[in-house]
Image 1 (cartoon, rainbow, N blue to C red):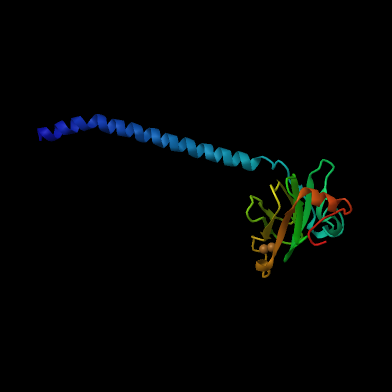
Image 2: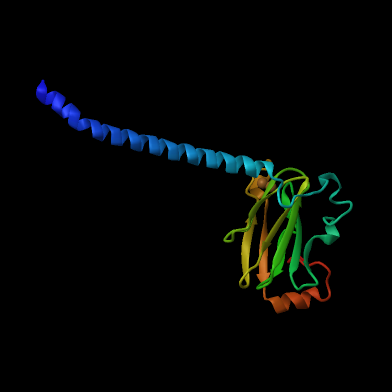
Amino acid sequence: MSSASGQHHDADPVVRVEQRWATVSIGIILAMVLMAAFAGIYHELMPQPRVETIDPRTLHLSGEFIESNLGSAVEPGGGVTVRAVGQQYSFSPPCILVPAGTPITIRATSADVVHGFIVEGTNINTMLVPGFVSVITTSFAGPTERHMPCHEYCGVGHEGMWGNVKVIDRAAFMRMAADRRRLSCVD
Ligand code: CUA
């Protein structure tokens, strides 16, 4: 009896320390939850830095995504802008031609439903959402060829929806660009 109460006396400070630590760790967890909630809500409330909208019903009639404007174009600063459209079940252009060692801006959208836009072996990975322009900036170190499959289920033909990206030597690209307004590997 006496030895049991003695043990109880010895355990008390240990229990107190344990409880103190439990309180501290619960406090830390609560603080982290609050920080995560704050960051999430704050991010949700802020407008996107840049959202460009576009009417998917008139893509082919006017504006930057008409067919004659699709493909790669050299900009005054020396960079290249690629314009592309995804639709069930293909990309226009089906093969994107770009120069190596050059800043590339890809501007793409969808003419119908949500499509995926991914270039295998790179960090290019976005969605083409009808009504919005997806903007990606990138560059390729050297000549290469990459697959560009649609990776967002978009209907019965989804599995067959894919394109290519062909990266060629910058000088060769510029020679081709000299007498063509828009380039793709198709022409
Ligand atoms: Cu387009 Cu899947």
